Length: 589
Image (cartoon, rainbow, N blue to C red):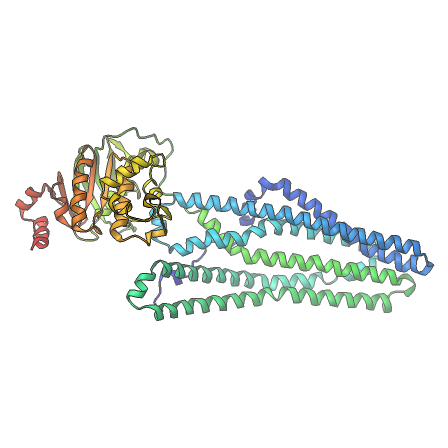
């Protein structure tokens, strides 16, 4: 199988330490009141349960030998009352912690989504979207129980152990020491498997992320898969990823399943030892039947919280990798952001200037080198040239989707790095090559960039770009529901809707990146008439491979060899008989 981003395991830069868990407390402390209430309720339930062996001891040693039936009935009623009380308290605690867990999920997802909204294009360029999605959904679900139930239960089980030890030492110090003699062995077992267990579950996290990324990629690319009859090959790749995930899961479960049997076996061994010491080693006169029954009962309960703590630690270790991934995402630097003291960019006229700009997507590889040009307000600039020359890069830099390495870019004389992103981008209308359609109605999609627009303004924008004609023929017109990525629409229809969305925002600077590539010639001719009026008074940057569509632009810049090779009007460039002339002539032959 060819190596791709979806099957490369992500490596964490630093090993996990409990500072990650400490950091997660920021999501818990706002609910500390409910967590404390749950802990107090848990203590009440625990004490109710721990009183039972003490009552049993009194019944065996006193009530039954004395034949005191009323006392036995009273003790039985007390046991029933304690059992019912314990169940009610446990149910109340469960409801509280469930609510806290859901609130923690909500808060983490809110922070993740808000942070993802601020991350630069480079973050999404470098990662399969499926690997991003699994962090927001699966990983957050996994850690929520650990951050609510897990922490309360961990504290509660430690208190349980303390309470049990107190009861045991009150009843019989010697048997209590026998009961805790297995702790060193238990600690050795836990340390022996902890490191391997964490690595195994981290591998499960990687394999799950890989499988999810490939699945998401294939859902999006289902049409291409069918066109190239790649069903069998893709099924084989998915089978291999699925097999890797299954093997990693089974290996992780193998380590996890070592915890409970080890604890259970140690617990059984200790209780057997207590019977031996109580019946054969210690003086029988000092160890009554009630004492032995109560102590073995407490010993069983003593190892139960230890097993529970083992399971909680098991859960912590299992989810540590997920917690690391979440914080890794939250720690991803927001490289494109407002610098301290950034000012609001007032209403602009649309003058744009590049001054000795150098930029590259990868370190040491420049796409643009020492690019300089300026355009006046209302001027239309066409960018042409071979694929990959940097045309889309130039318009992306104007919107500050990426930060330049050298030079400066100004709008109306103000460096765009000195103003807030929102004040800059809100005055720009950008139609990218990918005409993305969101789930919702057609009207929702057109209004996406200007939520306060009226229905009349939406229709006017659609008419300007010739989209109204096909929209009104649809079943519900502008209220027609479309699926994600506009599966019900043709490529041309999606572009026209995107065009209307861009124009409705009423931008001062308009960027059209291959805006008419999926539109038929007849529609394009009608669209050009509407655009000619709309472009008046707006600075516009137009990228087009069909050169016939940009002949009337004020200036045409031929981009190649890391910069601007030629610049001028159509007639001027044709007269030069240079790179533009050759490209135009090749298209008109």
